[in-house]
Length: 537
Image 1 (tube, rainbow, N blue to C red):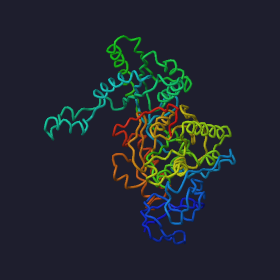
Image 2: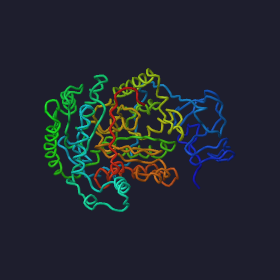
Image 3: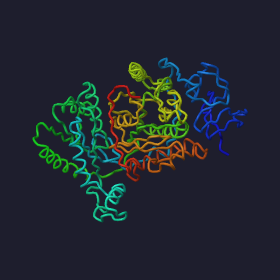
Image 4: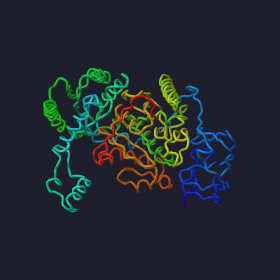
């Protein structure tokens, strides 16, 4: 019989409902009888003790809130009776100690990747088109239409056929020529980015965007790039070149840059771009996949559309996969700083270097101060979807979200736009916003991303596979075109966190090798939203 409640940490005074609970039910839990006082949906929390006003609430062994009214044992916690609270950070009070997982079956594992001259290895082989300023978005869209129709179209989409049938009154006819088109190249992808930045705003926005775009060029999944500039914008060509040189002064990838104000008509410019880029794409298609150690994986760790199960199934399972990767010399990347509120002390103590511990606290404080200056704060991070599914305070959400990073020592603290160079766990300052965070991690070198979710999200990325891991089986069955991996077996007690973590890492290796395609890539979900460094939680 499936358990009805779970307590994550021995010091917790609340438990998570694994199934819907009915008012009046009596549950035997840890040798005690608990009378359920309110109808409680699965994923929500009930208190195991009587709470007085201002009494502290603990989950995952950390402070996650305080009672704002009296709550009897067995009653459900809601935003009406609980408020966010977290412990202050005292600075580094301990050194990291780590029981690394057994990596005997993983230390010699390889994936089939694209080797670059700088020693990095890509999981994709992408020729990337992007603008330096939003004024060039239309030209990027024109190029996208041309290249995708001539190079990348397989079968026309089901929706295009549906619309055609509605227009012509024929529900079955598909033109044979369109249904059987083949890709011109089978070993390179052509992808396109547009954005709303590069001019206006403040100059720092353009400087940050330049670093991000330089990171996309440096990313091992990118084989070359075509860059469009208008000419007069804040994000000048030299700004991009300087950002590239800062990341890698010896970068030898082909980067083709065109400035419209120096090239005459749009047609003349596009014709030149198409000819030059096509030659680069042809050469890129000749690069084969070759074996590489999984230590070459830089794994972005993301969560979004989280629910009350995320912190006890998907996130800790991904955390175990992260620990294995760190132990073999790979580079997991944990981001979303607003979702680390409440677990800062643990993370500070896990920093190997004192300077990194201090930098983490500085970045967190500066971020929180900017949010408060705008009339917000980290306590306003949980979304309506989070709250509806049991994550009612930011500290509660953060305590579960941080589990994606496992337990390994933190080797580096990076600000947004900085590139990952150290093996082991890296912390990267990004917003909690799913796409802004994923965009940032890929710009810092992530060549694959694993994205846990309890509610479902279609988020993807133009140059890196984004794998969706569901916290529960109901979601996986409802959205099978979105979810790659289901961790619901952990909730049912059919698999351990460790077993599920190994399953996730096996899946990552298969996708990195090109044996499996991420569902987000099948959907053509190429999301790219740079962080403008304003308040974004």
